[in-house]
Image (tube, rainbow, N blue to C red; front, side, top):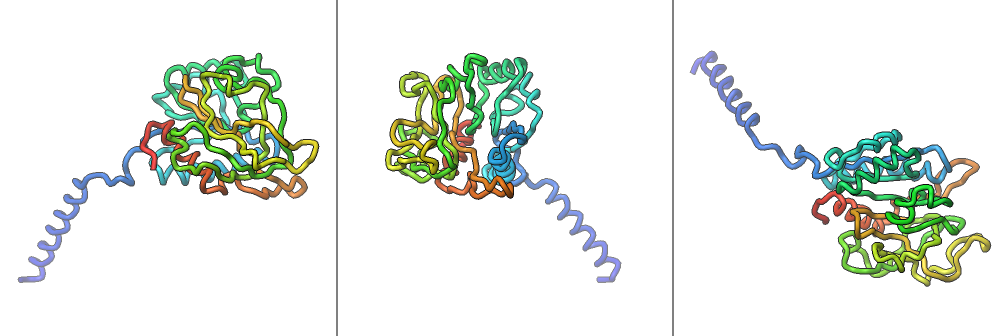
Length: 275
C-alpha cells in the first residue's frame, strides 16, 4: 500500500471515530441536575454567621456536584419577589430572612406553590413575631426568640419521630457540630403541624460555657419540619470564633453524621433519591 493510500485510510478511520463520539449518549456526569438550589445570605453581621456563610458557599457546591443538584448563592433577596418553584426547587436561608413586604409575600407564594425551603440558625431569629405572623408563628411555629447558649459548643442530639427521609441515616443520638443554640417562646410539641426531628438530649446539660447563658434542663428542639410545607429548619449555623483575630475555631460541616441530615434533607426537598 502506498503512503498516499495509507494516509487516506487513516483519515477515513479518524472520520468514523469522530462520528462515533458525536453520536455517543451523554454520560451521567453531563446530565442535567436533578433539582436547583438557590441560597440567600447577607454575610454582613456577626463574624460567626459570616464564617458559616463562607463555609456553606464552599461546602454546598462540592456536595451538589456529588449528589447531582445545582447550587447558586445570592445576596439579592429581591429575587424572592417573583420566584417560582419551576426556577429553583429549593431555597436556603443561610444567615437571615426576608425583610421587605415584597420579599416576604414572594416567599410565601413560593412555598404555597410547592417550593421547598431549608433554613439555618438565625433565619428563624426574631423578637417581634407579629411583624411576620405567617413565617414565625405558622410556618416555623417558633414565635419569639427566648434565649441562647453561650459560648458555642457541640450538643448531643436525640433523633425523634422516625422514620423521616432526612433522619434515616442518623443514629438514635449523635454529637452535633459546634453552634450557639436558640430557644423559643412557643412549645413546638403543642403545634400539630410541626414534626420535631431531633432535640437536645439531656446528657448535654449543662449546655454552654457561660454559667449565665447555659441550659441546665428543659426541652429544646433543634431540627424540625412543618407537615403543611416541604421545609426543614436546623438550629445550627453559628461557628465558634476568635473575635479578636476573626478566625473560625469550628466548622458547622465538621460533623459527618450531621452532614447526613443536611444532604438527605436537601435531596428530599428537591424530590431526588437519598443515598
